[in-house]
Length: 189
Image (cartoon, rainbow, N blue to C red; front, side):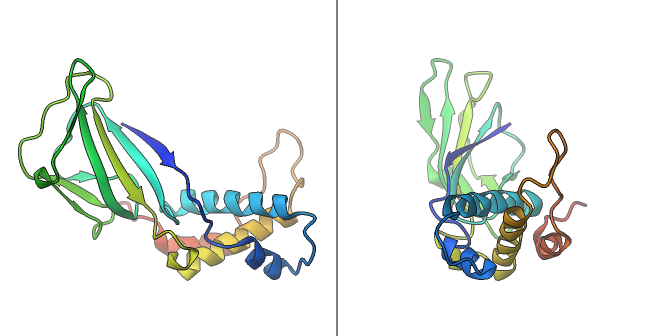
């Protein structure tokens, strides 16, 4: 199984103006650094929470059909946009939407096969499932606790830049950020 990012988010959960206001910065001298801190903080919060915050598209690549229903490895998923199966000649067949059912109501989201689906003809990467993940295309669709986690983490990254010695791991995620993210982590049973 492989997971490939197809389209990165076009917006972040917080704006540059919001972070500058939070940090009480009035000049534009470090806007590029602050924007990078926001993107890094989003990635950190996504990794810690196991959730994609803003709309992005992903491709799940499988070698064979797993048992149905299939648990999708990203959450939340807004939609499954396409499922393709490749034959031995490397020609893709799109699976009809009537043959599968998607539900984002589960955590993790589920994809159930409702009928016969073609078997992949190539041994590696014979199945591709494209999906749109994230809470939505606007920052306002992201839960406020996760937006605050991004804000706090971005501020932490900005204020603690260069604090680590070469070859030493950077400071860990602040406890306040981890506490905001904790309720959104997927429970492992």
